[in-house]
Length: 74
Ligand SMILES: [Zn+2]
Image 1 (tube, rainbow, N blue to C red):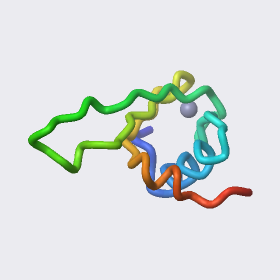
Image 2 (image 1 turned 90 degrees about the vertical axis):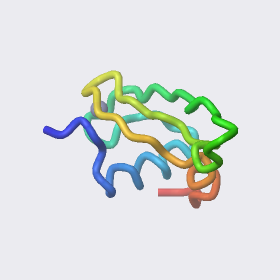
Image 3 (image 1 turned 180 degrees about the vertical axis):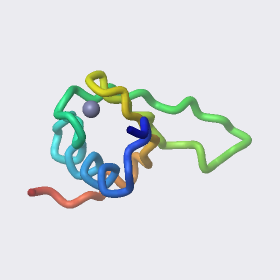
Image 4 (image 1 turned 90 degrees about the horizontal axis):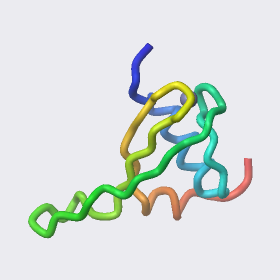
């Protein structure tokens, strides 16, 4: 199985994180979040976070703004 979340799983992660949850859409394990270090020479890297599932090891990078804009609710 791929260690990278699919597009659907990324969407589920964004909605979950926006709602204050941190569970993996693949296995239900806890998600670890780490801010991607900012680089002044590469603007697009800003405001991104790396999310890694402690349970299954799946990982991806999400745009923090997308998380904050994600609608609440199921
Ligand atoms: Zn997982």
